[in-house]
Figure 1 (cartoon, rainbow, N blue to C red):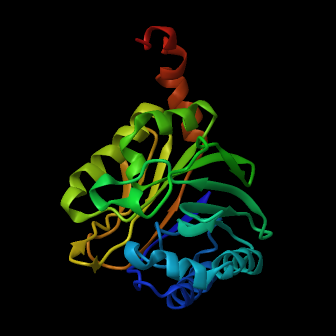
Figure 2 (figure 1 turned 30 degrees about the vertical axis):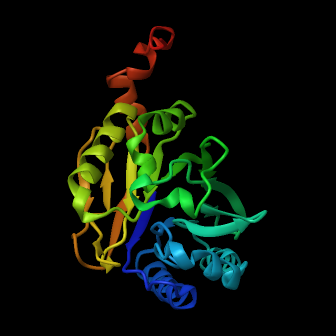
Figure 3 (figure 1 turned 45 degrees about the horizontal axis):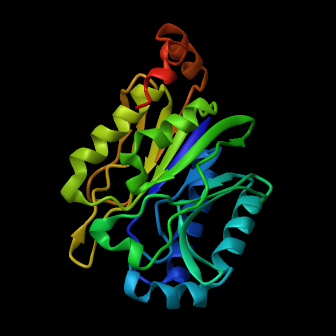
Length: 263
């Protein structure tokens, strides 16, 4: 399965400009590389403009949803559409959308863990549903959002549901870049899954972002890593049969004793 992950520098508070960037990138990369899946970062339409986010969400309405639906159908490509801010019943969620090659919405996930260091909880609501696997081209996958990476139970639940790839979409800061890399490797090793991350680069509101979007194989090896500062596309082809082989060679899941993990 061929993956193209877009490490982009987000234009703060301007969904239209960011959609234009994504469209130009997607058209180019699909023509040049013919990927099966495109991946975008967290909050790629607005960045973290939390104090004015509600206003931008109401202006955007369903524009980005329709854009993604049409883009996937036109280019005949699956899209793991990072995440965007979405208003529902007067509350704002940090939501990931997954579209298949026909433009069908196959999965949504609302970020469960909100970042206390950013006062996210003052502006957003945490997801109310557990993370579930979805299928693209007949293979099982999952998606988590940024701070979720710090919670091993979440990725383990996806692995137990049969996920072969876990996508991590993020706006992870450079101040914690070492955690970003180590935690991805840990999640890949302990769950024997591919981890494909898409982070942003650049700076906003005096916060520098880590970049370093990565692909890690189920053995924990870094297959490819983007730079820390530049916009960049990660192109990689994954052999998903490696998941089955590694789980057979090191049978972690059959060795589990869940009844002894409780208090």
